[in-house]
Length: 147
Image: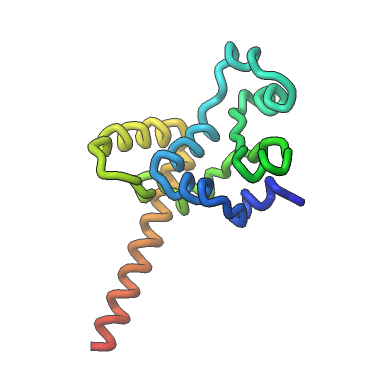
């Protein structure tokens, strides 16, 4: 029963979790949490496992606790820090906006702040965009060849 491992491998299938990681704002939150240290003043308010998690370099704990965990009397799932290498697969601006909204500028500004915290995220984004362009180019060439 490796619950944390299921989440990390993408096999945690709760509908709400899948919706969260598909959304632009959920993705932004996951990677901001992984890259923005928890303020020292807030660490003192945490207890138990949360304090232990936060004591590891000010790491922000990211938890999952839903209907399933509640119904089974399970503790919240404390997620491992999101690997920046996953960023290319979960780019916030490629996520779903669940309703028409006018916050694109706010989202872009927050992504810029996030990427300003980590040069590695910028590199991962560039690689992901280059791979996507390569994939689209290969697809166009296949279609042109068929015609």
